[in-house]
Amino acid sequence: MSVQLDATDRKILFELQADASQSLDEIARKVGASKTPVWNRIKKLREKGVIKQQTVLLDAEALGLEACFFVLIRTSEHEADWQSKFLRTLKERPEVLEAHRLAGDIDYILKVRVKNAKAYDAFYQALISEVRIFNVTALLSMEEIKSTTMLAL
Image 1 (cartoon, rainbow, N blue to C red):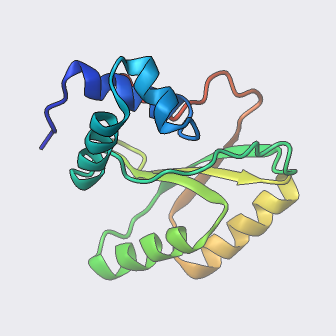
Image 2: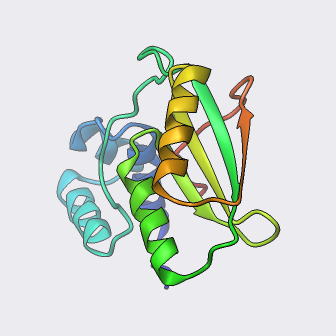
């Protein structure tokens, strides 16, 4: 179920996505409203689940996590127990930034951020020791062309 947003809500969300560290005064000025109504709108957007959390984006390469792999997983297992164990394993691995279940020939795709190929191999070995996987294909990203957390509003 989608939440109905007006133009002011969209402006507020745009500003928060661009830089959530902005002061309430700055956001209010940019969206053309006063501070209290903007605060009330932000509070309602949180309550409705539109704003899930506020966080800080870190530069992975600056922290030595220079290798980004997209991992394609095919499985012959589709039982609830296997899936539960697989999902738990993914959630416990800090290297996994994203995990998606797909329609089509590939069952899952993971976005994995590690220091280098050796670190990826350690991740891979740990993953396959935890859960049985039919086929794994790892694709190394040579260049990040676009990466954003901003949703089009």
